[in-house]
Length: 101
Image 1: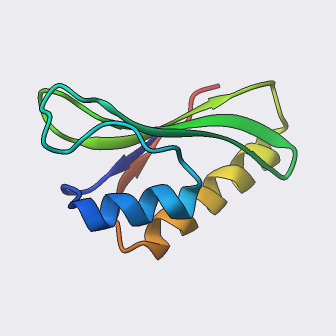
Image 2: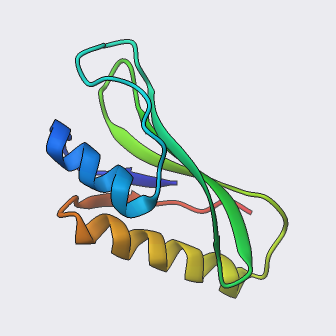
């Protein structure tokens, strides 16, 4: 999971979805919308479902990364590195990255 820092304006949200190849879902003006995009990604042999979420209560943003199989740890790290770089390329800051095995 990649927790994003701060809030997202519409232009930044659109750029983030475009850069990450995420589908368009959710509307910023709807407080109850939580899922804002999803995509299937494969990097260095690690296939994952990537979803952009906004918590309905705290309005904090995160990328959930669900691995499709059980790739090597180095492949998981490569996937996280690519995703981090893409997020940061849009100007969005990363608050934290957590990884469960």
